[in-house]
Each structure stands twice: as C-alpha cells, then as structure tokens.
Image 1 (tube, rainbow, N blue to C red):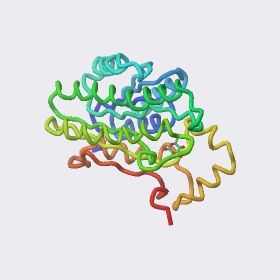
Image 2: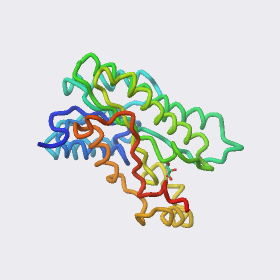
Image 3: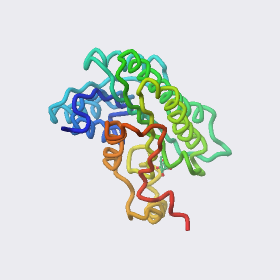
Length: 254
Ligand code: RM4
C-alpha cells in the first residue's frame, strides 16, 4: 500500500522546484495530483506528463495565487477532475532578493500577496472543501528556515515565511475538530528558480554550502519525502508541527 494511495493532492506553484518535486513525489506515492502554476505552461505540461507516466491522474490549472479567486477556481477544478481534495500543499512563493533600505513598495506588497496571502487563501479554500467532504484532510505549507532566522536581503520574505508557519499553527487549532491536520516544512537552501540568481554569486554559494552539516545544498526532491509523510496517515497524530529540512543548517551556529 502506497502512502497516498487513492488521495487527491493539490500543489500550488507546482511547475518547478519544490512544488514540482512534491507533485511528482505524491504521484509516486499513489495520489492523483492537481498543480496550480503561474506562468510556465511548458513546465506545467511536463509535470502533468510525469504524473501520468506514473499511472496517476493529473491536472494543471493556471492562476496567480495572490488573487483569492484563483484558490476557489483551483479547488473547483480539482474536485471536478478527481471528485475530492484530500491534501493541499501550499508551496507557491517568490523571493526577489533586495536590500532593506531601498526596498520598493511593490516588491514588498507582491511578496506578501503571493507568499502569505496566497497561502492563506489556498489553505482556506482547501479546508472549506475538506469540511464539506467530512472525512478530514491534510495541509502542508512550504514555509522556510526563514521562519526562524533572518536574511539581510529577505526582509520582505522572512516575515511571510514566519507567517505561513504561524498560519499552520492557528489553522491546526481551527481545523482539528474536522480531522484536518496542518503542518509546515521549513526548507533550508534548496537549489531552485527562487535563488538561482542569488546563488550565481560563487562566493555566496560556497559559503552557504559550508554552513550545511550534511555538506551540500538541498535539491527539490529532498522535500518530497517529508511533504508526503506529513500528508499521509503515517503522520495521523502530527498537527501544528514544523519540520526543518535543511541538512542541519539551522542548528549549525557554534
Ligand atoms: C530560504 C533561505 C534560502 C533561500 C530561500 C529563497 O528560506 O533563505 O537560503 O535560498 O529562502
């Protein structure tokens, strides 16, 4: 029996990076998977093909998570395709690295809208559907090590990741009576589109690598197992929790 056999799993920001790895990992674990994506049509189609190649049903729905209507549309389309929503992986996020003192207003607003409000609307819409279905569910937010530590060029971003972590804690309380579990993963530095430019600086990349006890930066696939676990019945008594997936970076201070 696979961990997510027969489940309907939704992933936001599913065309690349951690979202893509979570979507394919969920399909490998036996789930039908719907992805939301913002703009990369070809990448989204490739994820759909990868899921179908595993013998599972797949759906890609385009939309900007900053718009609350995207969440209701995504849920409705997934229900039309698979009949239900069992798991929401709220992953879509941006991090336009920028200094604090001259951070443009639009950059702050967009980052909060996508990362925090987008996550809020998606999790809320998924929870509403799960409550109607009446058989519980699981929500996994892709927060970050940045929920716990700062970043000089991430003053707009770290509060959104702390916010997602906090959202899972409050939602765990609000939804426990419905059998809906809410947890977050806190990835460290994972090599994806979000930090490609930032890590193009060879010195910075080397420094970041040197901070990781396991000796390497993360790959998106490093998140698939932890996300599938939290989404699955193996984590039936886990809610309101946050799981660092950072190669040990967070504890490596002294
Ligand atoms: C993470 C952490 C990583 C960075 C990403 C964008 O939380 O700060 O180092 O690459 O955010």
